[in-house]
Length: 100
Length: 173
Image (tube, rainbow over all chains, first blue to last red; front, side, top):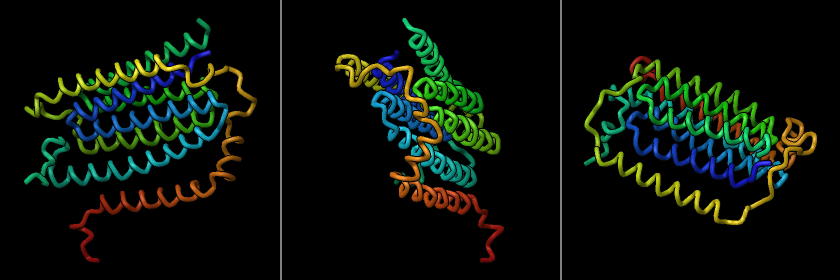
């Protein structure tokens, strides 16, 4: 028997580690992986609530989130490859073409 | 301390350690491999929570397809390690401070509030979270979102192909 709070705390910790990765790292690929980690943390919370309330709707939500994540990864990695072709770097500090 | 709780604590330690490993390793390939381990641990959490279908989807879609795509792009671009640039030096301590503040707030709120629901029991009904139950719900109440998902995937596929199209060679159109 594990209280729901423990799962929510775990989910919050994973989410915060992901957010820290987005803020600290400069490699666009690792930033992207951190975004995946944050999505996953949200999924943990949804499944925990679904199981605590004995209702399957949370799990359906997780299923849809996974679909969106897969689509996002396909488009995002294509964007990173396109950026690498034009700038020859994926350091996000060097991608500042819109800066005046 | 029941068996469930001990299992949860060990798995939580593994999940947090692998997430930190993903965050801290300098080599992007190691980061990706740490993240695979993290996704596998989360899949075991789903099994503990009585969601076998979601657990296996997690393994195939996240740990399988998505991370293979990541590793493929890392190795294709050859950017495992960025050269050490100067960057914005004040950002890192700032980010760590803000993250710690957020974490303290979150844990405080989670444990000060009354429990939002009862304990998660270890004995859900026979087919809770199985493919049959999920499928019945997915193809009845959630049929429209399910169909919209297919359009989303199609758009993502077309978008990825268009973005990576080499315009110099394919310029005859």
